[in-house]
Image (cartoon, rainbow, N blue to C red; front, side, top):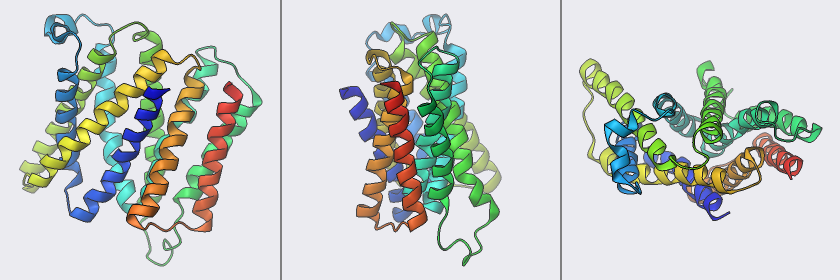
Length: 293
């Protein structure tokens, strides 16, 4: 249970930091790139057996392809989440991101043999409605928000769900007994390399410059990112509830903490429609939890 609580705290801080970056004028994409190098360093420092990180050992691992794929996806979804946070607020980004849980929950009972029930179906339907309601802002009509911004929560929702599903697959297929730390290391290295290539392109094409604030805050972001993911993997490995319960609990906690903190720290305002979306999000996750216990 401790691993789950620690993952919730770290994941909530990640979303809140994007809003902080906006206030401080920190270039977010640069910070995300530095964050993955910081997370990679953390993964190497906390690796129980350093010899396991040698190329000769890593290349023999059956999960290597999955770590590289997941790492490349992480940086895309992470960047989309940061843009959604800036454009539509902490509550919208956190709900869209964490309600991606419907994908691993469906896989849990459709593929991995966890208990199926009508409650889970109802919870999944609630989740879709929650994403839509929490994303609608009262000033959208007044300010002619571009249509692409309506797609941001949907993309975050789908991307997060895909990442959660691949994480779930890695846990079920490869990481039951060992390899969690090594898998995490390679995942973050893949994300860091992908982000660095994109950043080099931006520097050459658009003459972007490295920002010191991005480096400093990217390091902090990377520490939070590393522990958030590591604690989630450990929670999946040690808790007997199954992924259909662990993912909802993790995501409900993150949504609640990030939204409340967004209101308190950044004075974010939510409309009645947004509040209804948050209630549906809570109802969705609670329903799924009850169906799995």
